[in-house]
Image 1: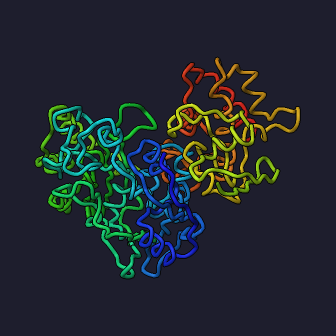
Image 2: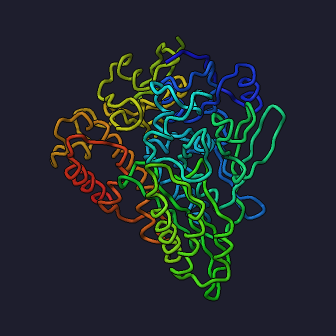
Image 3: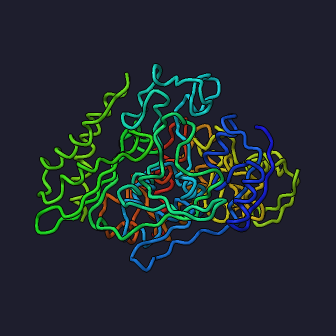
Length: 328
Length: 175
């Protein structure tokens, strides 16, 4: 591993100043960044450590929502009483990812900033990876792409974003609060991640040196009926082949609120607005769920080895909605 | 090199460490606490599990400089002198290992899990039991709960059945 400057930041403004001055990176839990540094994928000149920054509170907001500091660990969010009671789909999504050891280290901000686990990105012995080395090509398109995206990608990169938490944040319509050299701004979770396009090295829409300071959850209609279904190659501790966050509210026998987002299929949590809208006013039956699943998957563009994700995705949407309905 | 101070198993230790040093390498190579094992060095196997400020982590992905000032509990600190912790005794009684390489990580991990369960923490398995369990935490840990909560500790010998039996005996004995 190449050596680097290291310092603990004690204020948000100070952290931003130091990343601007050094051209370095923010360091939170380190579970992904340190691993990438060991492999030579990341070689930051400096690490600005956020451990002493605070940002570790989970608080109820006046509007009936919850604000989660970006330094709160994944475990602490998932186990917080406000999240368990108001946003159980967020707890379930977070707890379906990684292991307790990693969730105890990883932060909410870091979860959003983690990089893809595409093997061609993770291993520097592969010459081609536009995300790691822009302009070098994408080895996955003609290579092993069983785990790759079926939505939202193109010829430059077909990697998925690996976060489970983000998929739940998508159905909860969270807002990401960031602080940068030009001050604070708020970014909708639907605008946070970006398609690879002509800058596949950029996973998200943050500007240089912007730091995530918190994630705000608006009041949710899905406290009683939600589910996070994660389908993977083994029962635990694996990334999703397909995952589905589903939220429903049913009143007088018809669906009055609905949201579905998919993970493991795109460089961002994948939502199809028409499918959500089509559920409204309908009875919560399997036929209605299946129609939504067909609508969501209609735009899929599978690669040579991941066509199975289309059918798997349809079944997973129906099952996640059915499981959400059955929560007692 | 920079000074890093840690409270390791109750004792304050200040050592000079390379900024790149992981907590794992500092424990093993500098403090010679070799009970904590280096398996994969990528956070995949759990052999290097220790507790930092009371929470279990993988020490291979913990930068020593980052946790300067923290409290660290390694497998060497779990027994009370020559008196084995009930978990350690249970691993012996249930034959919860074959080669033993993963065992210190398994025990460190299970030791932290007892604390997590006692304060009502969840796992993905907990959601199968409905909203009440999600809000309050599961009363009793099923074998499926134990397996999920220890999923971060790989045993290449495949001694899982006996590991679960050992942990289940201790968990259910205390609930």
